[in-house]
Length: 495
Image (cartoon, rainbow, N blue to C red; front, side):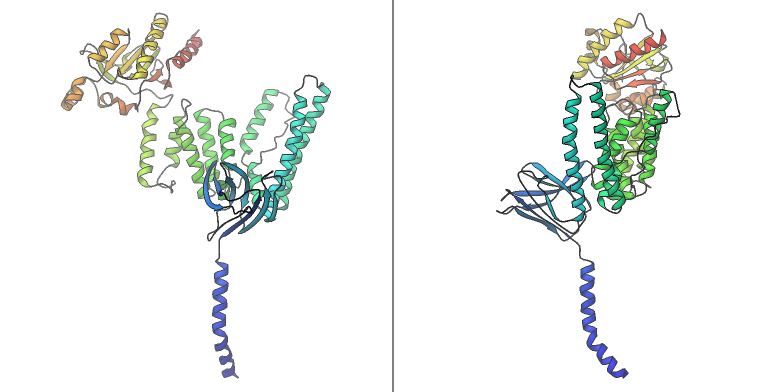
């Protein structure tokens, strides 16, 4: 009996091994296939593009045949997210890719309106929502056009506003139902990311100003309540990017202290997933490093020093981390509110070393310039004209640092009546480095003054700072027009 059983098992063993290999191969099989037919389209190249934040990238390329059929396919599964079909220089429509096989058909008369999803439950939901939104937008446009007419009565306006509110509620209710009925769908992830908090009326509070403040604080506190930071797929849509963009552009008070506080708040949430953390830090550090708004370098420095570290910034190499850290540390002493680093440099006579901190005026304009700089040639005479118009009535001085202390420098000062405390690094320092050591040892100056380009991060000119009587930085990187505007406000404060 046992012998017969062993013989049977021996015969079955190869079949079992083959079966296991087949099953294993099937279970590990990955890939994607997007099959489309677009009637009216033929013999043209088409691109499948993917989102990463607000950026779009080419992911795949295929060719329409003569009957408008096209297939995108690959052996590796695509990252789940929102994708676009792009051809002829335009985006035809977007769709969700989170299934291995998708099939759809449409035509060139109206790519979206005539779309028929043959295979993809996720996209049936996605386009059902899109159809609803398009329909309601058309209804809303008619109502808004009527609302803008002078002939529309107040009673009619109230009725129109109620209808518009009802349309908004209908769309919102649809999304909420998708979240409820299909909680694990990609559509649910989309709508939760888009969702904004319903703000209480705070009707118990009678003071309107207090109510506005309470509503604002509630919105700010609960703005990200429904965002699933643990799901990195939110990076593969423009929605998370748009969410944080709106938060930091339209909601957070645009001061460095407020932004830093809220950046910490959002980044802490983003730590729920490494890729979401990476995207959030990358977005914020780039936004504020490139910001043209004065003082936002304080936000860049805060984020760089706290999060762009060897422990946390896993996506960059050590050399890049060191570079960013060094940049941030260099900016810290130059932030608004900090005491400006003192400079002691030689005046036009070549005899007097003038210390900026020794200037005893209520305001000091610190300007870095170059007599060969085209923009300086325009701005410096304007600064001289403005300074001459206020110097008799206001306690103000100009400490003007030139990159060259030569004859050309002196000539420009005389020709343009630059009645400033004009200083420069002595020419002999550039010609003989031992002179720098000599001047420092004699106590005339110091290294940070002679190396003022690095001290003040000067890579372009002119650069204008405004300092108060204690030499604290009030404003920086100003044009003469903006300097005048800021000083006018400062003078008004004193009156």
